[in-house]
Image 1 (tube, rainbow, N blue to C red):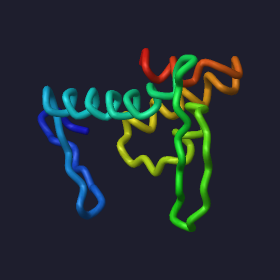
Image 2: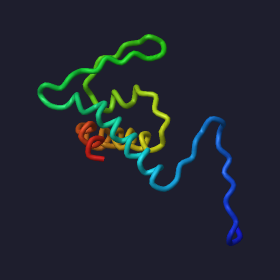
Image 3: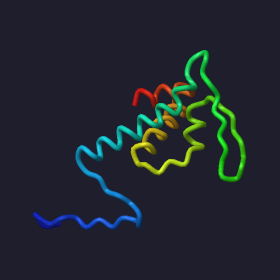
Image 4: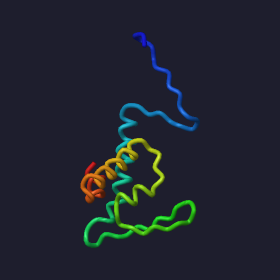
Length: 103
């Protein structure tokens, strides 16, 4: 690409593009929402989550990675946190909720 030319971005319809502080704020918010979703499953008084998918199937779990896998997530930063949880599960077998909260 020649110097001074702007790249051409082709985005799907109904998408938004954020840059700078606004993008940073939205990414942090996505991470906080995921962390808050799984945080209540931690500890001896951790609560189970009842998940219902689009077909009406029900899953009851307090496993962080299971909860995150069942969620339909479209935000790129939130998807990265789900990948963190999956990697933690694959490598260690435990600590997925804590990994998401810390990240």
